[in-house]
Length: 440
Image 1 (cartoon, helix red, strand yellow):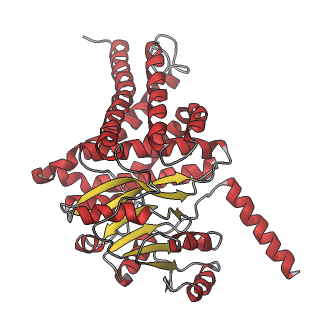
Image 2 (cartoon, rainbow, N blue to C red):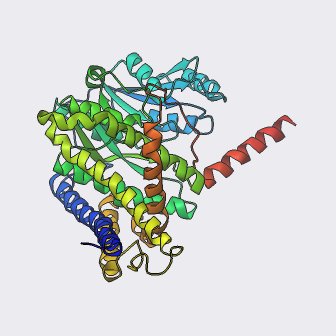
Image 3 (cartoon, helix red, strand yellow):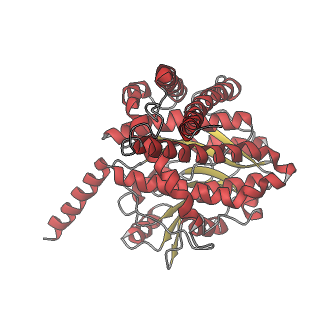
């Protein structure tokens, strides 16, 4: 019969094995999937700024929901209006902004014939703003970006080709690139979007289905979005939710790495924590909403995504359990608990895990260097990723699940003011000071 010490040691070793081997296995799986995606879809295509001719160029509507975007709206709209595409319209949805976003939009609409502006009387949230824009859009294909994102001129062309090629495609998500790189957190996120976000999307596309489109840059077939009931107003991450709704309805969702958009990301720990907690809570909402997919054999193509989501959740709690057990060893009398070393990485395997991490970073940066010049120089900063981002993402996942369980069903998901980086914050403060001095 096992003693308590032997039982705890067995549990510890089991947790340690899972915590170590799960990310190691997923890392190699992602790299193999990304390599397969590159071999199938990327290696023979021309550069992103030289799109291939299309058999037809159906018109598109570019939707830009805005909430308190006075500092960024004009720049974002000017980039959208500079899209290199034969026929398109730009629709800016002012979702009850409390700053002068509406004034800026009204001024610009008089200057640009392609621009249309919609003012919502009250703040309704991003999902409802997108729905309002889609209902007013003239065209079947919708390109949705955030109010602070800068659209690449050729983005529309690369996305539309998927709709033209296959009538079963409901959504095409693009390749966000970080443009604020003034702090360590900003530089690390540049690598994260390649080594984690971009690589996972490539791998998931190779193996079947995407877990989520990017809320900051995705094109949709309007009829497909209408068929599934548009975006859900009560989901914190409407991008994850719409991805699952479309795929459960039988539609195809694709990733297009040449569809570029330049975005702002948090550059403070507080801003990063708020963002990752929202992402994790939204993921937990989607898990609870779609857990019944296991009861539908016809939707077994989504089972691997659900399994990965569940295992990632279990992995985060397993690491937390290991950490708590390890800390308990410092306060409980000596000998009551087994002495088994650090809870983070088994000592004999640290080199393997570290080498795998560096290999993943190097391969992913090579893939995205075709679209982001000088990305290799960012490789140096990725040594900080496991130390900071792993811990933030793990604790965000642990906190998010009970938070999602306690959230009222049907509660409207409202906008939150994001942290858009130290450089942009200083620029905005300087602009405000200039306006104050001008009125003095």
